Image 1 (spheres, rainbow, N blue to C red):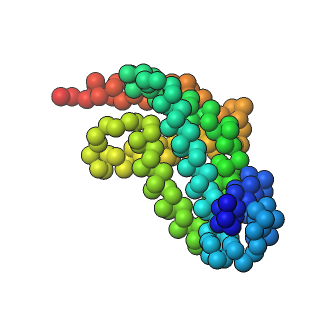
Image 2: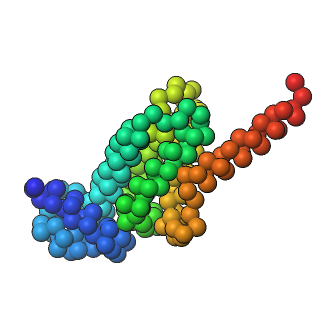
Image 3: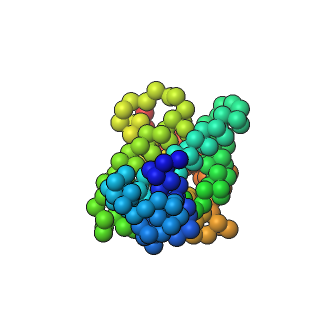
Length: 198
């Protein structure tokens, strides 16, 4: 590997061990074996390097999730069963990637202090919303505005679920619990629709 790749590996190691806000440029240099000047040469700033490390780690998580969903065979035909199985896979993979989620939440806390962190997360959020629709809903053709709304919904759900797992894994939701909640919401909507005059 060259210095660029070494820096990325070192930055990910620091994110897992120290978090975003507590990682210094010298920490990354020590973890990567590169030199301080190479951060500026290859990435511009320490924040840009850490952002790249978060994005690569999340891409690895998404790839694993895609593989896990494919290896699970055909997802159930009924939407609630498909939702439960997909979210069970999301949560199982979370346990292996817990440090990167903790680092991501740590990075979000820097948005008000470091403008390039905000720019990074604006872009990353849009990419995540687009990816989650394909990963969790499949190749269903949706009107553009609905596609965006579904991506925002899944992203909000993912962020909330992961936050609960970071804070209190013992009481965090399971795929089955999320599916049960979704079923209750769907049934409530159906009841309301049945009472609406034609």
